[in-house]
Amino acid sequence: MSLEGELTRLRALEAEDVDLLYVWENDPAVWGVSGTLAPFSRHTLRRFLDEQRFDLYAARQLRLVVETLDGRAVGLVDLFEFEPVDLRAGIGILIHGAGDRGRGFASDALDVLCRYARQVLGLHQLWCSVAPDNAASLTLFRRAGFVECGRKREWRRTPDGWADELLLQKIF
Image (cartoon, rainbow, N blue to C red):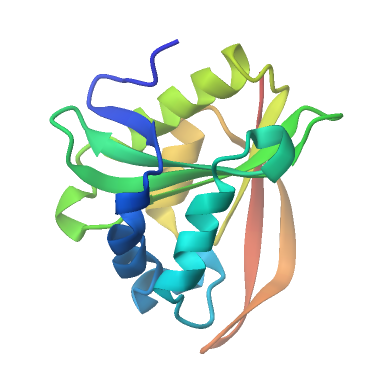
């Protein structure tokens, strides 16, 4: 199966991606959705890249680079908390540059990853957590067939107080 859509291609992380990850993972603007509280060192990111050489069953997670069809990296998609018995995984997506958002890259990459999860990995479902005020992410996942199945009340602490989080899932 090709990991290519109409606009994007998903590819494995490479050692030379450490500088890209260093910039994206250390951007405080995305920490709220990634659960990050402190910067990552290049050493830590190199170790993460090294661990990605294991398959999904060993690492229980998979991170892929989202790139345009001409090879420009624009983001990342993750499968995490993979449960091989229950055939499910969490999913997350980041399109980093503001100029790359709203151009269909996230939607295309999400479609490719869902197809891969169903056809190659044989997963029964994917799930994601989204803040109720993250309209772009809610629209993205709902258009991809994810359905809201729960609300975690006062789940995340923010600078403005406690915030809920919505749980969405897609059952194949």
